[in-house]
Amino acid sequence: MKKLLPNKRGFTLVELLVVVSIIAVLSAIGLAIFGNTQKAARDARRRDDINSIAQAMEINYGKTTGGQYDPLAAAMFSSGTVPRDPISTSATPDSACPGVCQYCVRQGSGTQAGAVCTQAVTDIAAPNMPLGGASNPNWIVCANLEAPKVGDPTFYCRKNQQ
Image 1: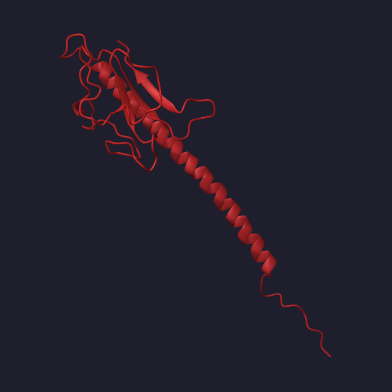
Image 2 (image 1 turned 90 degrees about the vertical axis):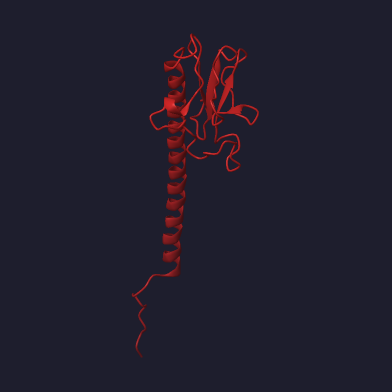
């Protein structure tokens, strides 16, 4: 009588399950890291955009208004448009990430130090915001951040320097 030898031409079910489990864990880790990297990149762009808006306002201080801020205009930017949030380019807060996807501005003599952008705050996409001029001597432009570092604020703001 011949003894049957085990078939060596395949993988056992346990071996296949182990491999699939390892692939699933590595995929989950990769997706988490990739997602946070994208959020950090969008936050870096938001900071750069807010800096650009603030710089445009400061550079144009008093050019046509005699010692006051000129209204923000698309012509102040080399792209020909006012910078917009990398996720939401609409003029109202985006429902995909409420309170996150907009640049906003506060203006006037009662301008507060940084705070989270809300629907009650004027959207930066509105025409000629901040308005500048005698009635709006102070302004602050802000962007909410998706992935701030631990201990950092959840928003980034720049205010007038004059």
